Length: 231
Image (cartoon, rainbow, N blue to C red; front, side, top):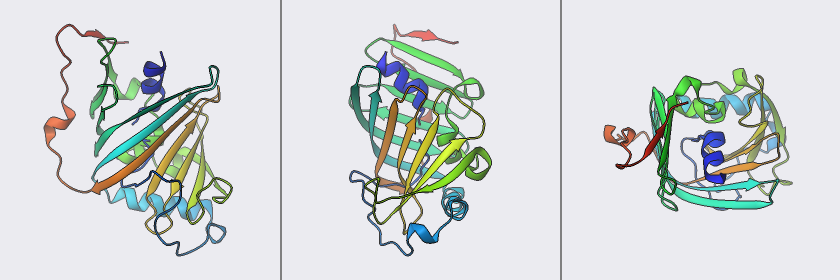
């Protein structure tokens, strides 16, 4: 159940938000040209948006930590993610063999252990707007109410932290925290928190931006014997 909920709520795909991040440690790795206090949430959102509007493709390793509040359990995963505008993405979970793939029209969520694949139209899925602007979709200022948070209190001194609350409520998450590099305005970490206080965090490592991607990356056929579920 944790695996299925992780996919359905996260898709993932924070993706997010964030073509071109780097993480591992919570501290910003670039020198800060200006302190967070000198930026407004609107100006910061504009700078982040500008970076991603210019990014057509993105590839990185990722680490994901999903915390289930009701059971006080944490699930860690890792793998590689690829985005390509408009609307394409591919997540390869090295930790369990799961896959999340979208060709821009349909999204497929494959769970290796259960031999099941969930498939549906992108526009009917709960794919969060948190990651959709990575794929040429949502705009931060249009989709969210924004507020600057104190990066020092959140262990991200030297960077910026932007709180984003969706203007249109979604069951996928209640609020979103974007950890932004102060030098490049790339998002290094995405943290989604839902109404049940579950926390879904993505860190992005060794990013490569605007490099060609093989079209086959966004095509996925499940192994023989997989049960395909289409809601």
